[in-house]
Every structure is written in C-alpha cells, then in structure tokens.
Length: 105
Image (tube, rainbow, N blue to C red; front, side, top):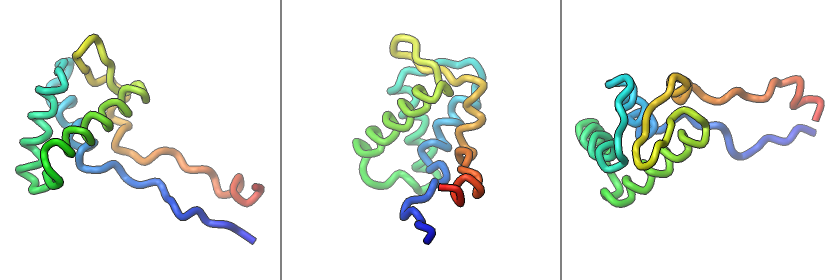
C-alpha cells in the first residue's frame, strides 16, 4: 500500500520572486534589509500582491531572505545582503525524490 504525503513541494512565492529580481537587477549591489524591503514592497504593490499588512510582509520577506542566506544564495556581511550566482536556482523547485526510491521505501 502506497502512502502519499499531504504536503507537496510548492513553487516559490511572490516575495521570493521579488527578492531574486531585486538582487539580479543590479549585479553586485549590496542592500541593507530596509532598502531591500522598500524595493520589494513597491514591486508587490505594483503587482497588487502586497496584502496582509506591511509588518506581516516585512516578517515574511525577512524569513525568505534568511532562508536564501542559509541556502548560500545570498551572502550576509554585517547588515548588508548581496546576491550570489546560485541565486538563479532559487526560483526552480528543489529536486524531488526519484520514483524508484519511493517505491523501494
């Protein structure tokens, strides 16, 4: 009997897309979080996707940024963040487990 997980790997959300866009727009640029959030917030307002309040969006953006730092896609130096070459992979879903490995389990 095969069991299916209720959770699936989701595609990157709008906040992650805008983080990647902000870093790739100006190659080699470093941002403090406040500057970066202002850029992201403006872009999301233009897309009509800045819902849930500014403070909640700030928390989500910070969490997504720290996730990118932990995955070595963004480098944190002091209070500045800089996008790395691996950041291009942030918008692609993570590798899934091959089906043969699932069948064997």
